Amino acid sequence: MSIAERGNFQRAAAHLNLSQTALSHRIRKLEDDLGVKLLSRTTRPVTLTRAGLQLLPRAQATLEDLSAAMDEVRHEGTTGEQQLSIGCLPTIAQRYLPHIIRRFSERYPAVAVRVYDNSASEISELVRAGTAEFGLTIVAANRSDLAINILLKEAFVLVCATDHPLAKEAAINWSALAPYPLIRVSQQTGNRLLLDDALGSRREKLQWLYEVQHTATAVRLVAAGVGVTILPRLAVNSAEADIAMVPLHNPKVTRALGIVSRAGVPLSPLAEELSRMIVRELRKERRSTV
Image 1 (cartoon, rainbow, N blue to C red):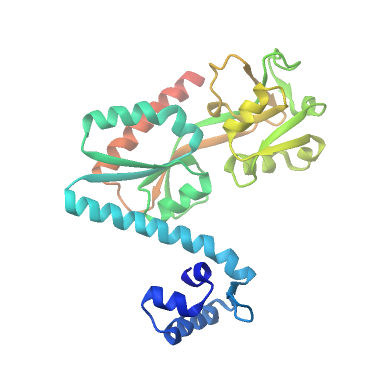
Image 2 (tube, helix red, strand yellow):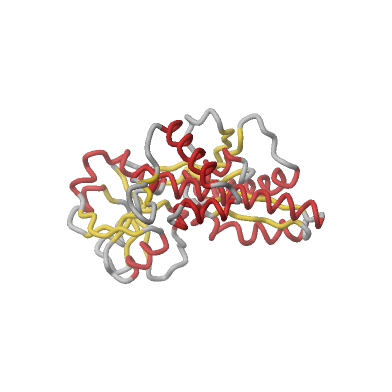
């Protein structure tokens, strides 16, 4: 990363307190291990190859996670303050975590809580790496490296403006969406992957005219009359006056939400307590939707 930032072996070596020869040797060994070139040495400044560009953000994220974990341990060791890190889907974090963490903080006022409100795939990686003790996320049964506690299953629904022609329907088939422009969320999200898998070739018959990165943006576009979108029911605030939700059938698509943690690694007492509070809250939601 230092070479990429400075574009020069000499400046990068000085920054790292290494000789230029030692730094070159380490880079060459890494390239040999990977079987690809990471740096283009034929230009000035030195630039990253395509493989280097792919590796750089992942390496940066890994180092940032390591740095954050070391800061937590260092802070706890010097101040005696306890820290707890968890992962949570952004929509669930916005809807449930504020009052859960408030209650948790009333019991444990000296505990600092870090929430990684990231995508489902990112949460799994954070848990696997030990950066987050557990995650509240979309779960799949084929993860042998993670312990899974499924809390509820929720359906995807049509989200449209209250004055939309479909807003008053009790339920609709996917085919009824063909005439209307749709807004979808980025392919990097777990929700998008679930929908694509469930719909198969049927998704090509729909007018996916708009794409956004976050569900909140999709909802605001819906409210503005730009189009309609498909989201999990819990991702939408049912109290919004200008938004309607309509059940979808043929197929009915659902997602499972649950707690994931590292298999074979027990949670700390604090993480166990916060996990129990989240489980109680989500199970109340499950009972209310039955």
